Length: 395
Image (cartoon, rainbow, N blue to C red; front, top):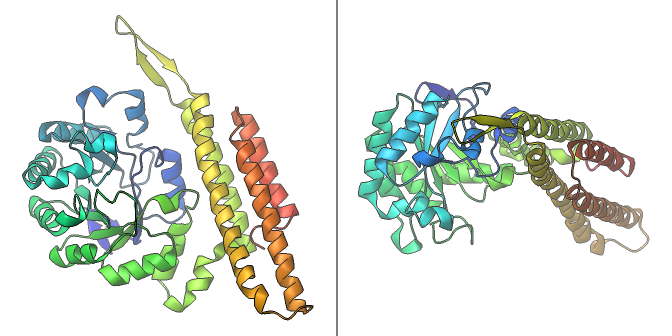
């Protein structure tokens, strides 16, 4: 079992913090779907930004299951220490430090993965943050600034010496951004170099891939980022596969082909939409006014905007399942003799998959144009019901 400070982590698949993605509703969905740990969106350390509406949305929520994790980003040790204290005061039970973000707007301020070019500054930030709070501090990095200067092992050893409790390593350099394939040899080297838990990250989009990466790197767990969008059940699939024999690949990774599982996922999608609407509609944005007055301003329009993004990711994931069905049928059909029952069945399945794909394309386009919570809720429930009438996506 993975241990981070006083917290014992039962699973081996955790959710990566993602700006604009890992809000409270999504964290709750992923945790319910098997994520052993979830981390809030990246929060700025700039003192002027600590109490903005966006920053308040990104705080830990005391209603969340423990441990509550918040990631901070910045480039000045004193500011990072102050931000860590602020987040702990507002409910964070683990503070994660971002030294892995490749975004230009972050790196141009010498924050995120840009810090990997300056190990002395890395050490100063780590020591300042760890000294500032009485909760575990963790770190997320990349393998280096560019392929010519991979220094993940150096940074990992430094982090462990400073007292960092766990480490997540994305298998690309900052220069690679999200291009090309992630490499795991550097992560394996980090695992061999330190005794703290290491989570492998990058290109882990299925339970099979997670299983392979764990075997290759020896990591304590895997951190899932983009692959969880529209696909939160990836965590339960990873948990089940890593706890069972590898021969169970098909059973555990093709759950989208099992009717009962499809119904459960349909309910999850609907509940996720409701949670988005509730969270953003009831969150009060306090806007500062001259004279120190503040006015509460709820944001139903923001709820609609956020819902579009997440629901469309579910549509995209369903399309991915259909694409696999089409690819499988295309591969099988050519080898069948004309007129056989098997060929007729293959053609029927292919037509059925195309029908589902068209329905999903249309649904995605229409949902993006809906401008009210009621319209979104009604449309989603009607559409998922329609999927069952034309043949459940899981059939």
